[in-house]
Length: 199
Image 1 (spheres, rainbow, N blue to C red):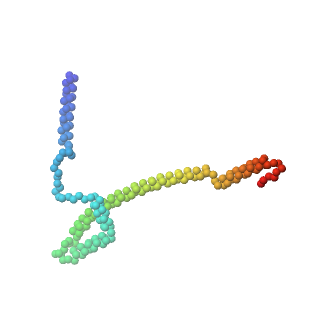
Image 2 (image 1 turned 30 degrees about the vertical axis):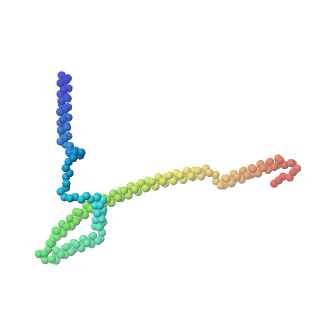
């Protein structure tokens, strides 16, 4: 009986592992090491460096923020309106509601907005890098200042232990006096009592 239960468990395990393998095979995409056909794009696609496109976006955003761009855009709109109002009805390109002009302006705005955002993101990334460099420089300067402050404090403490000029003079005077006194005492001892004392 125990053997039959054990055989049933083994069969169930084998069935489960086989089912799991089949499920995994269905789920797994093609393996990377399996050679396959390389798909060619429908249109020839030129790879562009993201930095090159970012520089273009910055230059475009910088130009759009100038007075020159605003002057040219204003002149274009004024000329468009004047030509479409002044020309006879049969030769008008864009009659009074100026729908085509609105389409052109909205198209220009739809391209300008992402380019301006891209330029802002690049500037923000540059600012973040500059800020990190400033933080590192500030931390290094702070560490240098702390080190110098500790060195100056230790020098002050060392200088406090050193003898001053006045102290040395007084000590030398006292020593000189004591030496002179000793010499005088020796001279008094060596000199006969009746001999004159040398000064």
